[in-house]
Length: 194
Image (cartoon, rainbow, N blue to C red):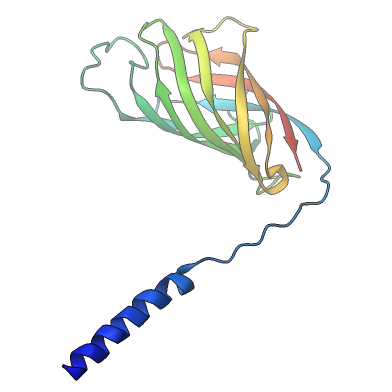
């Protein structure tokens, strides 16, 4: 009986002490004034789902999607690792890559819209090792966009030189192919960061 009483007291002690040591340490301090910077970038983005070396892959598709004639059937999920270059040609100097996902949302097989998440990372130059993140809806557009049509997307974060970034990116198609889904876009970015 005495051993059971000692064991019960030890268990009560352990259970009473555990919450005290399970707490995390936290201290809030007032941040000093920060100077917001604005950075503008211009580069070209190449999304290539066709050919021997595609940069975009279909990773999931809804079983009920019956529109096989659309390059991006409704409900299709794609992963991407697209190149970023200095010039419109895919063979021009690569400055980084965009990695992420997009979900095709248009039920009209002649149109394209998607929810888009991507991290745009730079691998050379002043911003090497820095990135910014887009999480936005790509507005409804024809699969072969008209020249000069500009699409805006939201920037929701960043790392490195773009830490805590917000802003927007303007996309303009420089070339696209409705049959293959290949597209190259000019990207003008305005970032606000610290």
